[in-house]
Amino acid sequence: MYLIDKSSSTRIKEVKDAPKSLLQMLSQSEIYDANGKRLPSVQQGLNIVKSDDGSVRKVMVK
Image (cartoon, rainbow, N blue to C red; front, side, top):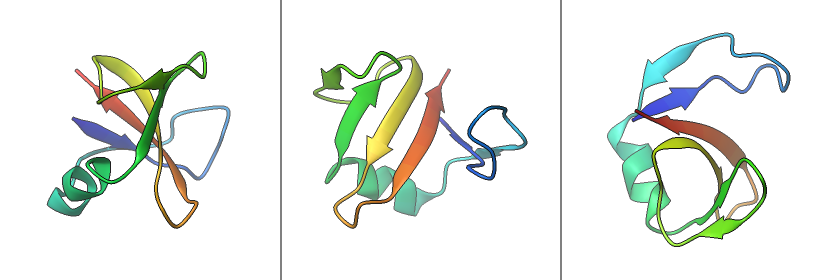
């Protein structure tokens, strides 16, 4: 699982290994696919994760 740097909304600047804190956050978040469909859990490919505090992250699952 990789976290995509959110410094740009139109391109991928940096890809990092997901920290353990992100894995914990995923269990308490709303998860969507690239088309905006809500998912029960992260799926292979691009996932958009909205946390309880309102922040949004793009997560790529290989």
